[in-house]
Image 1 (spheres, one colour):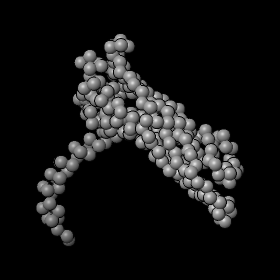
Image 2 (cartoon, rainbow, N blue to C red):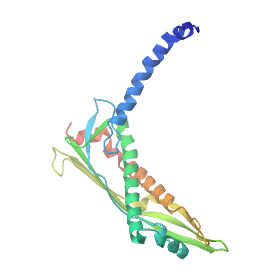
Image 3 (tube, rainbow, N blue to C red):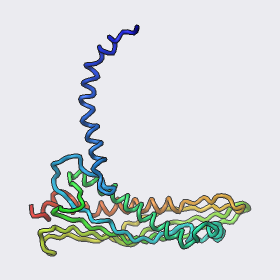
Length: 241
């Protein structure tokens, strides 16, 4: 019969390893369990301040393969279920959802670092955000070969981001900070390529990837522009503390 002594001899060492590991495990589970509609939440009951988050408002117009200059690509997609209009509408909703996720990720990480607890109601300060985004594509080159039609170009981001941070106890003049970021001034751009086989095969297209890259950069850059107003110390001042 195998002896239990080797395991028992390791028990004190294993006990201390679990002693230090379990608090970290509990904190990780607490942080995930306390998420607020996609926003990360502090794993602590002693935040610097609580902040109410209003839903992110997004209006977006972005290029999809449906708006490309490649005629064969459009013809290839026109046979899909739902029609071109429904596909474009769904694509815009998907891009809006993606931008919202990026805002929750990047802004959320910032608030965790600032020890700001995000809630749905009852906080002394409220954050409102809205995006009106336009992403345009410009074709630089188009090539029609024996087997493929290839389109290359660049996509640029335009539009605006607006935010308002309202202290509940202040008047519109005293308890308010607001601002606007012009997206064009950020000079965000990304190349794209479409490659449509003439035999009706699978279309290779980087339009979606390019658009998502720009949306992620928008979320990152607007945070850099306004982060001073989102710091815990700034929120405490708006709350009159």
